Length: 229
Image 1 (cartoon, helix red, strand yellow):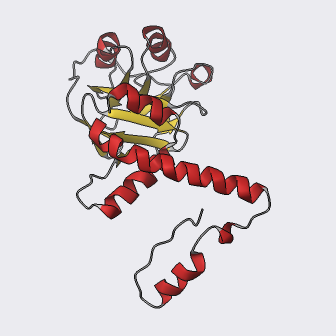
Image 2: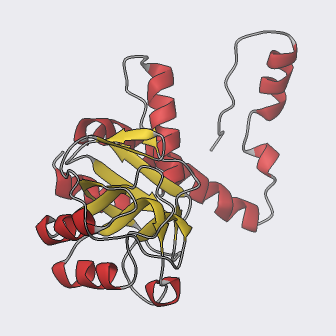
C-alpha cells in the first residue's frame, strides 16, 4: 500500500476507528507497533476538517523564524509539525495557514500557541495548536528543521504520516497504518450497521455480547467484548 492509497482510505475513516483497528491488531499480534497518539490538549482550531499528510518538522522556542523557513521548504501535501519547546508566545497566526493553503500543504500542527483564530476558523486548512496567545514570538533565532521532534508526548519523524480529525491526531509509518486500516474499515462497517439498526429500534445490547462478557469478567474467565453483527 503506497501513501496515496493510505491517504484516500484514511479520509474515509476517523481516528477512533483507526486506533481501534491498531488496538485489535496488537491484541492479535503483540509484534504490531502501537500507533502514536498526540496529546489531546493539541486541538483543531477549526473543527470539521480531516488532515492526512507527511510530516515536515520544525523546532523553535519563543521565536518563529525557523517556522517561516519550514513553511518555505515544505512540499505540497506535507504537514508542518512544530515543536515550540514549551513556548508561551505564538509562533504562527493567520498568514502561515493562508500561505500553506496557497502552497497546497496538508495542514499545520503546533505543540504550542497560535493566534488569529477568528481568521483561521474561516480557512479550509487543518490547523491544530495547544493554546492561543495574542503575543507573537521574535524572529531572531535559528533552530532545526526536518529532524525527529517531540510533539504532544510522542516522537514525530520527517515523513511520518499525520492523520487528524476532531477527535485528535494519530502518527504512524506507512506500514503501521497499512496494518490498521483494513481492520478499521471492518470496525467502521459494523458500527455503521449498528447505528442503522439502532435508528430502526434495535437495542445496542442485542448487537453486543455484553452479558456473556460481563459474566466471564466476574468469574475471572477469559473473554472479549465483541459485536454480534
